Every structure is written in structure tokens, then in C-alpha cells.
Image (cartoon, rainbow, N blue to C red):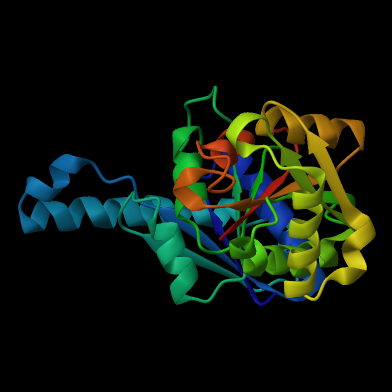
Length: 276
């Protein structure tokens, strides 16, 4: 893991993300790219070139000062940290920068759905989850440790998910002693028989060359994917949740909706997302 991007708005939750990313960086000798997007008002684009340049210069000066104090943290010692300032408040730009720099992970902080302060909160978090082609980690509290005991990865075991599942296993196996693959069997049109589920699991483990994880597969039935994942995490003392997401359609094309975004908002645990 060579590069980790942390989008920040200098809030407390951004610092949680920074400290989490720092712990991962020390373990993998990674570079941290700390990115802030200037919150320029819409009116600036209709002003004269001189006024626009003056306001931009002022915002840059303020941001650089904020970076000085924000990055003055003892846990960053020995880590290569590169501050980056982008001029637009466009959250999908996070994914563009991650792609350009070939980042391995994006780490961001969020208070969740019921808070409306800061940049990377509520619906804004959902937008980053939806657009990110790079593996994403969302945290909501100060990290106790990134040496997790047990992480669960929610997936439908479809052939389309094979690449994302493989990426998730590779990354999360480095961070956790145990990784479990979880499938939630839903009623009605989404219901699968035992034989159908077992065939899916067998095929995916063969495709990803992960037959060694055959005993690390959990199959449960429920009416709601989000509640099922959170319930499983609570019952089995899970430290973090991984999700194979289909971007705009949530966990995957079978479940539909915005499950990945909802789970990121409602889960108190760290949540990793991997886009199919």
C-alpha cells in the first residue's frame, strides 16, 4: 500500500481519519496525501478576474495556515505527508485525484446521517462512497487500533463481484487476523435456495483462488440487508465491516437501493467499501 488519500475539512472527524490513515501508513510504509477542497462561493465565478484571484489567494492563505496546525501531530512523525489543495467543492473529485495518483486507499471521517456540519458528512459521504473506484474507509471515532481481530465482508458472491472481493480480501487480510465473507439471503424475488447459494460461494472462491476461505463463509437469512449486517457484526464482535458495492445501486445489483451509503451513515464501526 503505497499511497493513502485523506479528504479533510479540518474537523475533529477529519482528524480521526488522519490518525487512522497514519496508523495504516506506518504499518505499510505509505505516503499520506491530505486533501482539502476550497469552499469557494458560487458568486466568485461571476466576479472579475482580479476579485476572483484575490479571494482565491486569501482562501489559499487560510488553508495553508490550517494545514500547519492540523498536520502538527506526533503520530505523523516518520511518515511522508503531502498536503494538497483543490479549488472546487466537488466530492467526486476525490475519486479523480485517487485515480490520477494511483492511490491504494481513501480514508475519510464522518459523523453520520444526522449531523450537518462540515464537508464530509451525511449525503456528502454518500456521494464519495458512490463515486469512489478506489477502496474507501469511513471512520467515525478515534481509532483504538488498526490491527483488527475480525472483519466481515458483505457480498452476494456473484461472478461480477469476484475482482472486488479479491481486492477486499487482500487489503483486509493485512489489517485483520480473521476475514469472513457474508451473504444475506433475502425473501421474495431475491431468495436463493441452499444449493444455489452454495454453488455461488463455491464458484466465487474458485474464481478468486480463495478456496482456503471455505470455512470463513457465513450465510444468513433476513428481511433487510443493513440490519442483517449490523446484527451479525454485533453478535460476532466484528471490528470493521467491508462491503462490495455496486456504486449507485448500493451493496449489489440484487439488493438495490442505497445500502452501502446507509450502512456507512448508520454503522458505528469502521466501514470499508470496494466498488464492483
